[in-house]
Image 1 (cartoon, helix red, strand yellow):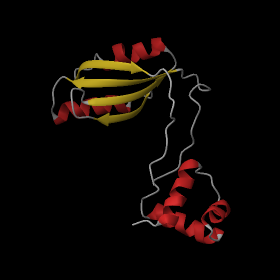
Image 2 (spheres, one colour):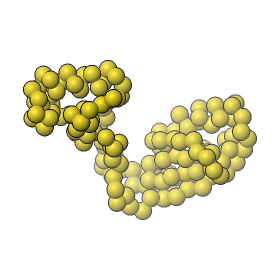
Image 3 (cartoon, one colour):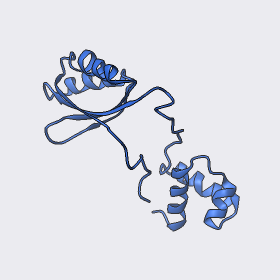
Length: 151
């Protein structure tokens, strides 16, 4: 189990992965070496699984974010493997979830523009024999940005 200090440390590294041991120590009322050891233990225990930079989609020319629901043509392990192999080759797909309900998968995608989203759906997803139906929702705004986990 994690204690209150670990929770505050986790919240801090979620907010800024580049926070230094010195800054963590000040925040947690510990020495820099104690804060660094706590972070290292949380990494070793698998609570911290990695660090990433957040990139600006707009600066990269990605202006359309969408959620794409995919309904499979059949529900077999082979069909699922085939679909997931396809998803792995699509750089526009930044996240994929399996779901309960009508849709089998939910894809989060980023595209340069609407024609690129159309191409992704009509020329790469729908032609795949594993895919029966696709429904997309285009994101108009994101009032709450991606946040860290509640700790």
